[in-house]
Length: 87
Length: 339
Image (cartoon, rainbow over all chains, first blue to last red):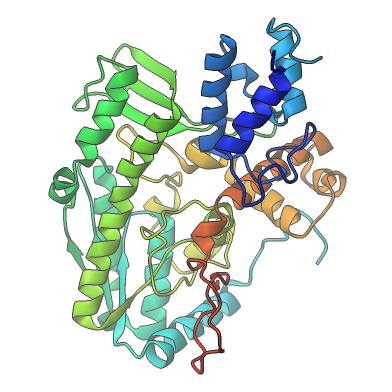
């Protein structure tokens, strides 16, 4: 089974493409600091996570601590009951 | 200069002289045109730009254009006309509603809003998109939500990416339609189009590419919004304009710049933006402004995010370098927009 972190990384690479795929985006990379997250892309990420993992993300949960890196997303998914997301 | 709450105070006499010199040099020597056309929105930026252009070139060389549409505040056009009269400049009024209707702006946007709020009635209800408020005290990403105001109350909706794109692309037609009107008149009169974007807006990307950003000169782009207000008071912009809350005036029902985009009060915004540009630490900036380092860090993070995501608004379209340097001293492709 593909780990949540790999699914998320694939999504990020596909949806937030750069001219050197994979370069610079690792588990801990801040999407905001890397300049790859803007107001449009947050919505794309939210739509993906809700559809892929069957969760509902509240407005109050749209914070960098939950969504600004693959690590943060995995921890957030774990807290939402997605088992194995942060392992 | 030491950072404190007065760091953005300007000498209005010197600043007026400097900007007037700039306008005169640009219009007469660089562009070799007869005067200036500018849009008068009823807001403080365009009123100040008009004052400065009149001082620089004389009222007979300035032509104002008031470009209302059915969703702009009626007060805006009234104040714009009042300011034009006070300055002794000719200002034509062109209602751009029929043009926007021809572009399907209202219908396209209504269709998207109704996907989320079936009962939305554009004739009676207001709508706008906003970012989460109070960036200083809340961790929050820049996620736009749709707000619909009805007689039954106000409702908020999470937008899907395609819906946000559709709303923004429809809305931006308003500023782009105004740009077309301004250039049409300016070319007819052999004038330049004067922009009204200030530094706060410029640095954070709060303008529409080829809309209100589509101009020939930007005489206010080095002034933070609070400095615009200082100069506006000095030059006698009418008080009713100076006392209005800054707003885009493009959304039915109204929204302020703070609610729509900036997420903090204007004065705090400008001082923090200055501190961020000056690379002050969050501790140092916070100490002077009576904010915690955590609050300042949230603001800096927001500035960084907006600056990075809007870089293209401030640049010429990137292109490959030419093989040999051009003899003309034009703007460098991909270079920054001068301010």
